[in-house]
Image 1 (cartoon, rainbow, N blue to C red):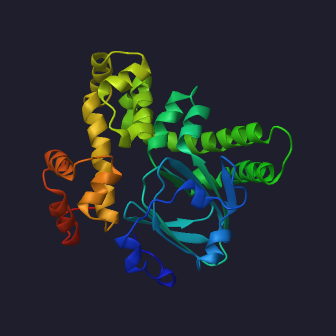
Image 2 (spheres, rainbow, N blue to C red):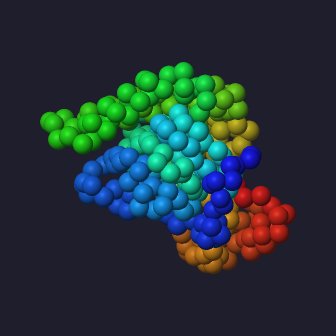
Length: 309
């Protein structure tokens, strides 16, 4: 994708590291809030409109760009984003921004577990929370006034202190996220039609996101879903052609690839970050699933023989 010259390029440091930014580092107005809202100019002006590559574990982040444009990288893929546009970033996705100066918009950050609970009665939408989505052009411009109103209502509630503030914030958040996912749904359904039809599989995927680094056995997930492990695997195979264990391991492998691609951390640190007590066991797991050792994968990335996830 062609990026205008006035955006320049991301500094090399941004590609070498991708730290995980915790919720406590995101919010700085009200330390006890479960949701954080702020204008994009808050960090834009503080960081010269360039936000280095980073990721959030267990957090969803929504960016509403109401004017201006930005160069955005999502898991290594560049995008030119022009207002009006909205982006919802899933946990673990490595992202970086280079905004056109004086761009305007808003940013909302919320713990994924809270968002999953809020959408529990809408499994088709909940299933889509595992993927990052970017909407711009006609899907947004045709209804930009509605999106602006949803963001403004959430911002007003966040800035206030009326009784029932927490409940109202959750209601505004659900309306905003529903607006986004409804417009992202056609493409997602086309790509994942069978998986989206299977509520059990989507609930399983949501649980994987919550417990990924704890290395819970398959029986744990089955018990949480109130089914047998065999029943869960049959449903996974019917929905997406993979066993329940393969789905779990594939998600762990994706996270390992992200850390190896976007972090300079040693393999031992990557293993520890992913919950492996034994780095040798992690290396064997990675080699078995990816077909090459972690260090070989890193070398292939550097020489262009492998693509970042």
